[in-house]
Image 1 (spheres, rainbow, N blue to C red):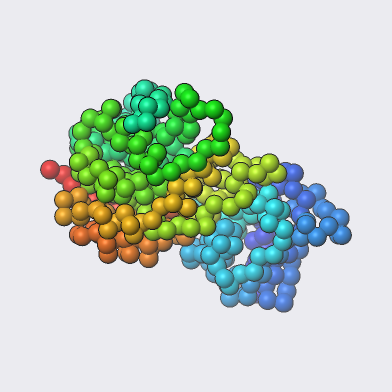
Image 2: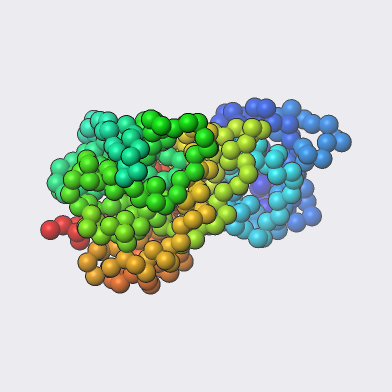
Amino acid sequence: MSVFERLVGHLTAALARPEVKVFMRGLSLRVRFSVGEQTHEVAIGTHPAVSDPASEIGIAASADDWALVLADPAPPTYHSFSSIQLRNPRFTITGDPLAIAQARACFESIFANLTPYEVEAPLADLSRLRGSYHSIKSSTGRVAQIYSEEAGTGSPVLCLHTAGADTRQFHGVMCDAALGNDWRLIGFDMPFHGRSMPPADWSGDAYLLDQQTYLDWCVSFIEQVIREPVVVMGCSMGAGIAMVLAAERPDLIRAVIALEAPLRPRGRRNDYLTHAKVNGGWHSAAYVRGLLGPRSPADLRRRAAYIYSQGAPGIYDGDLAFYSDEFDGEKIAKRIDGKTIPVSLLIGHYDFSATVDDAHQLAGWIENARVIEMPELGHFPMTEHPAEMLRYLRPVFASLKD
């Protein structure tokens, strides 16, 4: 069977899945999948008029490249629609940018279901969690009622969530009984995120996170709630601010565990993250889905995206003002004293936002820093596959025990 015939068969099966049909609602597109000179056209949603060029989207590549998309598993940058669109020059994506943004959730669902991977994943024992609210005052005098949760006993570990998300991302790690024997794992939802409402003085203006504000909330939480130095474990923008904490407030940091730490992740923001004509929940969740490893359990990948679908309008985009526009890992890494603060950089191969090369460059500027590569995982390892993440994390924590 040719690659073209295989692709048509996989597409037909994917388009029939209930999950894909959910994301078709409101769409009116013709999508042309081209394998070399052969083209297969599918209608998504209500079939548009032939004369409407805004309804036409093309996804084209050679047979060899489409064969990699259909591989089990697909290699990095072939594993999702967004990875192909944003990082794979061997594919040509054509069409109106607004139409693509409106259809991103549908496209990610289609690509995830071309070679569906369903495997049972154990659920975290959430009964181990203890949650509470804290009135936190920043150094500028702003007050926020910040929600936090913790599990385990022992030395404190501060878990910092990714842009646009909340502490639920770390449940699979925080609730691990083995880690909880030695470590008190604590996470908090940043103001505007999860169960933490905006600060009391918020006037409804656009949310834009900057490094100093982010640092201030983290320092304030450590000083006012935890009240002792911590091991800080952050992912993505949380990894970025973990490094900033080590550089700016080394008195508060015992060690850094940076998951998917960026170097200079420019270009992660786009005009459609907060747009009146694009479903923000679907689009943000799809942006996340494109960064996940294809062999993480499907239900956990859906949960990782689901967290993002619940974010308030503009919050993911506003966090990316720090993560994508401002953060410079080189400047921060060169200021970290790796002789006194152990730094571990854990990086998934399917992450095209913070890359394996990023991690190695960052480690080169921090004395004694180590890179731990995770070939199976993507940008949200603690959420998409906590059991696999723990396989890499447990030795790191073992090395940090007193």
